[in-house]
Image (cartoon, rainbow, N blue to C red; front, side, top):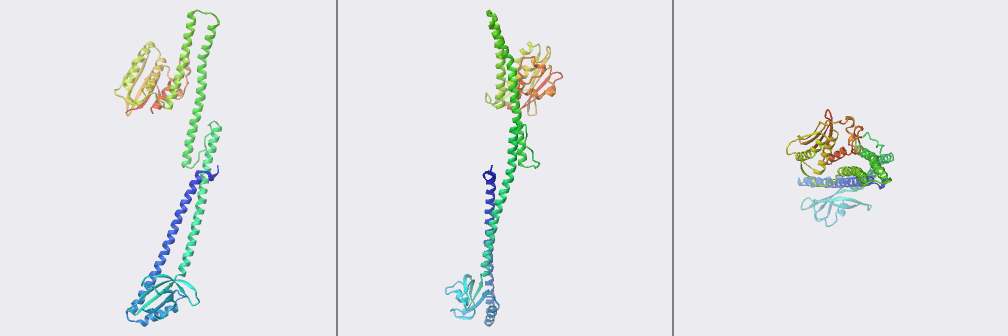
Length: 454
């Protein structure tokens, strides 16, 4: 991807343009304020000189005023400061007569300076600032100050400001381009790492930067996502293999049974027996598919009923009474105890199915003349549902793997089942933001479910 077509470059250039605009406004503001201050200083200087001459004149010394004017005109460089003294009717008395020509005939605003042009003897036009002031009813004084240096300073300052603005814009664009280039390098590394991960079947992970910044945090999240994708793909492959393996046996039995049944003529009872066995096998297959569908719905958060307030105590008592007869058939005793009013928010049907799966497994793997226990208690803000048995238990090394779909221990392969029971319980608990944990019941297994109380 070309840098100029990326959002990173556009953002960098936008930032550069904004920075350049702010810099230009700042420089032009400084330029304007500086010029106004220089003008103000010039006005104050002229007024100060007028006040000085006025003070001398007020002391009654007109001759000294004339002497000062002539001295300053001789000492001043070319029209830097030029003075003239006139009668009130405008008749020239002493000083530089060209100052009067600069003043004009209609200047009627004493003690207020005005920009004019001073015309020298050789017809050179020089910008000046003119100020006239009546000393008395008889005389008035006119002072001019050259603005040539001010105009040069203004032009040079403006040129400097324009150059500074141009340099700021160029520098901002270069910096923006450089910043965009650096960001694109990091992004391209991530893109390359993702492509390598895809090519390797999500086994390769993105290289982690040593700098603790937002790209490192993003890389960590992407690696976690790639790891999750890898686990899901591996799990899907494992589930596919297990489904094929577990369904092949009943389907093969059904096919063989039906083929054998059709080889010879048989009586009604033999056909009925073959059909009943086939129906049982089909029931096992449907049970497997229904369990897989329930797990998928729970993992996807698809509820078959709206979440509501559930009294866990009542639910456990109802299930205990329901499975008491099943336990008696297995020559086991089902014992239960519950605290009152343990209420949670959730899907009653899914929670009932999860607890039922635990009770079925506990009864199925319990030896005769042992007890299966069910309890619903509270601890802090959690409701704890515990199902325990005295059966063969599960080795601690397999506590995590038994939650995988179709995972069955070697000791359980001789018993009916698909290995989806604990997977469904785990999916239901994840949907309800709860947890499931396995513990050694000495002997047997104890399963604890934790849900948040309301």
